[in-house]
Amino acid sequence: MKPKSLKIFSVLLITVSFTSFAQQQPNFLFFEQNMGIYNPAFTGSEGQFIGLGYRAAWSGIEDAPRATSLVYNSIEKNKASWGFSFLSDRVYVENQGMVSVDYSYRLQLNDQTNLHLGIKAGANYNNIDLERLDRITQENNESLGNIQNYLNPLLGVGAYLTSKTYFFGLSVPNFLNTKRFKEINGIQATATDKPHLYASGGFAWKLNSTISLEPAFLYRMVSDAPNQITAIGKINLKDQLELGMGVSNNDYISAMLAFKGMKLFDFGYGYEMGQRTSSTALRANTHELFLRFKFGDSKANNQTQKEDNKDKLE
Image (cartoon, rainbow, N blue to C red; front, side, top):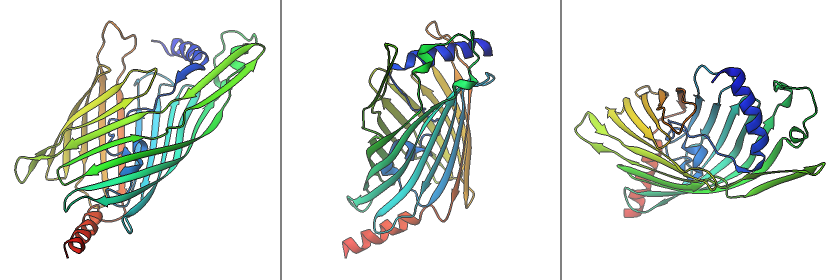
């Protein structure tokens, strides 16, 4: 699809999408590193850090989707942690996303298993720059006049179960079903932010002192849109290097590489390849990056949990 054709298509899509379609949040290939976007209960489970993520879809196409994430987690104190999450999802003239404060509290189930319960509060935003549209004609378009920027509140909850060998999460990052309505000259425009349900999980199978297998998945469900699942199989080498391959039910396959051996930094690169099928009109490759700065030992919380276990046994 040529860039100009894509822009014309985007104009039509933006106009039509304001007639009761559900917005969808982007799925990151490095969803474990961006878990705070989806699940507030993840906050504090891996110590204090700040993480950056960047996803560039439809490589080679001008004004194609670009997603940026920022996640901060504090260190755990008295079994509680707080964090900050930011997401920007831009495509052509539209930029939507969310900003939130996250809080999580850890419940110790036994000496190796913890249940984190979290809450997320903030706002969803949407900004459409109509001045950047390549207009086909200069005649007034009443449908475009209905489109407005907005800022709506969000409130979400989540649970995150962890142990030394597995994790499982379930969350609704925003359960407010927010509707916006406007009528101009008899033309009605309605848009709805519908709740997304996320389920995630994974486990580590240690083959020897050097290698472990670590499969993981992320499942997203929202009404009036196809459910999506991403599954990734990773090989972890001495907890310093990860190599992975993934597949999604939207006809994408992926590969990823992550470096975790540095004291203060983790970083990685991922690549998704679209598979052309009879039901798809556009398949372009996607690049993804993540960077995490750790303020201290990422295992600090493990030590805190060990001390809690000791106190409980005594």
